[in-house]
Length: 148
Image (cartoon, rainbow, N blue to C red):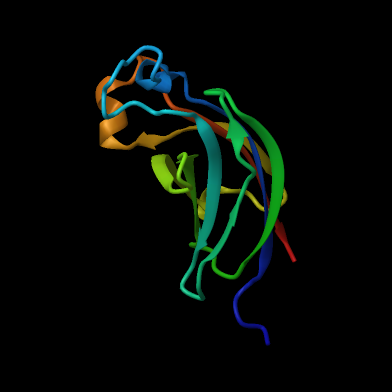
């Protein structure tokens, strides 16, 4: 054994502030192809490391641009330079997923044993940037990295 150090990453997806999407809602944007017919947001998490990535996802929060999830996931991290990718999707009426925005966090920035609780700025899909409101698209996540 003795190869590399394994640690457990606990990711708690807390909430998101996507009021910037409000101008794209059908009530305000009659007949525009870019509108979001329904806002049903969820977050997909992907741990990126060369040993293979692992994915998990939150539940869908319907009809809100300020969803609160408070869902916790535990992932085994096998590499110090692993990253976690957080992607917010909108669940469309016919079951497809529409990319809303994403953030990639480097785990090397975390202190082992400490819990960080931060709002991260999401990179929005270009279509959503065009008609979006002035507020920043944000996702609040709590991260704890513990040596196993």
